[in-house]
Length: 186
Image (cartoon, rainbow, N blue to C red; front, top):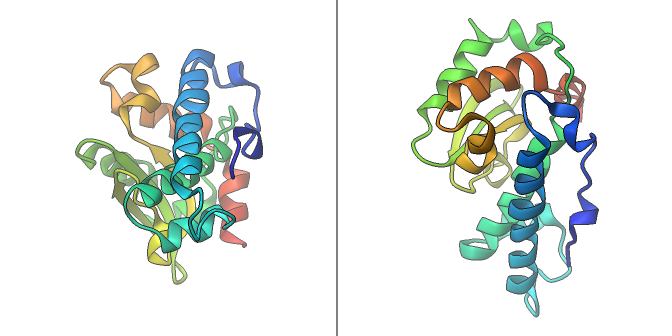
């Protein structure tokens, strides 16, 4: 069984301000991530997944179990990739794209409804992809390096319907590039 304590934030809740408020983090982390954890625990009780790792569940389940497990994985990955740093995009990432920031933002704005935009390593090639709803690159054998949550609950308190502004703040001020480049070395 999973607990919120297994997935601690690696930053102080108000340290992402003014780009993401502590109130938004409270709702996003405690309510949304906490809700997925509670739902998954209920769904896996007494099943083959009851004592499995989160990644195993994401890769080997479907339906409601997959949706909740993948949302936990995706959210934890998103939160782990945040830091109020303002650091620039690493050269190895920037050079793999014509205009990384523009391409990433275009992908984020292209998601209809709810989903995610990812930077992935797909067999040695860096790509920007989107996934709908709870879908996750690890379900498809791809290696995630970075993600931006573009579900409205991720940004609505601070940005209302301005997803593009949220994406700009993320890329300009909030990406933990050490986390991203560390994922590429794993």
